[in-house]
Image (spheres, rainbow over the protein chains, first blue to last red):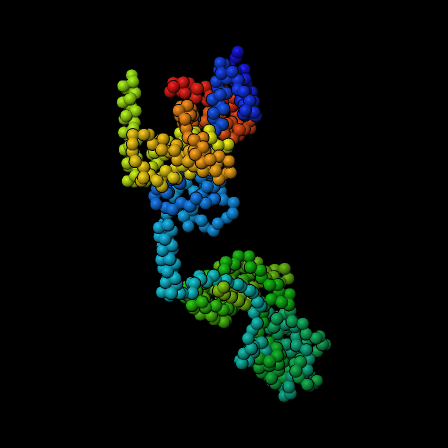
Length: 359
Length: 186
C-alpha cells in the first residue's frame, strides 16, 4: 500500500468517525485504526485559546483584582466578545485584551490629562496674544497715460507779431502756413512784387495744424479789412516785432510770443500712437514703506524716445518713503515699442503711474 | 528501576508541595500549578460532559475555586491533582443537580468521581492533549482545525493555501507522531 493511499484511507476513516461518533471504530490492529482511535480522543481538545485565557483570568484574580463570574467574564474566557456593548468596560476592570487592567493606571492617566489641560489653559491666559504678523505682499501696478499739460498761470508761447511800422493795425486775413522754421516772414503789402529769390512765407507753428483757408493772409483776429502790415516792426503782420502774425512778438502766430512749434516730442493722439511696453520689470517695494504698510501711487512724467528708451524722468506726483526712487529706478530700465506717427517712430511724453499696494 | 521511579515520584511530590506552599503565600505562583494540572482536569471533565463548551466552563470553575480555597488546602502527601479532581467532581455533581437530573446527591458525586481505571485514562488523555501543544505548528494547526473545529480537508486546505494531499499528509504525520510519543511514555 502506498503512502498516498494510507493518507486517503485515514482521512476517510476520520470522516466517518466525525460524522458518526458513536459508531464502532476501525480495527485497532491496523495502523489506521490506532490513529483513528487517537483522533477520536482529540475531539475533546479544548479550544486553542481557552487555556491561555483562563490562565490570564486566574492571574488577575491572584493579583487581587475582583473577578466577577458574570456572563462577560465567561465570554472572555471562551474568547467571545460581549454581545451587548458596555461603555468603556476596561475603566471598570474588565477587558478582553491580553493584559490585565489596573485601576491605578486609569487614575494616573486621568491625573496626567488634567495637568495637561490645566497647562494648556494657563498658557492661553498667561501668554499675551499678538495679532499674526502677515508679511505684506506688495503689489505694484503700472499704467501709462498720455501726458496732460497742467494748466499754468504763465503766458503761453507760440504767438508772434511783426509789422511794417504802418499807421493802422494789420488787416484781417488768415495766418500763413505753419512751418518748423521761417525763411520769410508773412507780409500783406509787398514793396517788391518780384523778388529775385522768392520763398514761401511761413510762421513757426506745428505744420500739421489745419486752419481755414482764405484768399488773403493777415491777422485772423483783426477786424480791419484795409490791407496793412500793421504798426509793428521787423517784418510780419501785427503790432509788435518779430516776423510773426498777431500776438506779442516773435515769428509765430496768435497770442503769446516767441513762436512755438515742433519740438521732437509728441503727445499721443492726433495720429500719434501710444507706445507699448515690451520690457517692464515691476518696481520693488521699499523696506520702509513695507514696514509702515504705506501704499499709494507715484506719477512719473517720462519721455519715451523713438528708440524705445525712457528719458527725462520726472516725478509729477510724489509718494515718498522711497517709493518714488524705486519707481524711477525701475522705469529707467523699461523698453518700449515706440509711439509712431505716419509710420515712423517718434518720441512722446507720457505719464507713468506706478501703484504700490499691500494686500 | 522501581526505586528510581519512586525517587522520581518523591522528588516530583516534594516539588509540588513547595509549589503549593509558594502559591499559598503568593497567589501569583498559582499559575505554575495551573500549567501542570490543566490538561488533567480538563480531560477528567471532558469525559463527563456532553460538549466542549460545558467542559471549558466547568474547568474554569474548578480552577477559580481552587485559587480561592488554596489557603485551606492541607498537604497530606496526595498529589494536588487529586484535590482538583475532587473539586471538579463536586462541580459536576452540582451542575447535574441544578440541571434537574433525578439522582441523589451522593450518587451524583459517586458518578462524578474518578475511579482507578478512569485515572489511567485521564492521564493518557491529558498527556495526549499536552503532546498536541508540542507538535510542529503546521501539524498542530491541522489537528485543531480538523478535530476541534471539525472542518473538512478541503476547507483546511483552502485556509492554509495548501493542497488537499498536503493537508492529508500533515494530518497523518501529526497522528503518527502523537501515537509514537504516547507509546514511548507508556
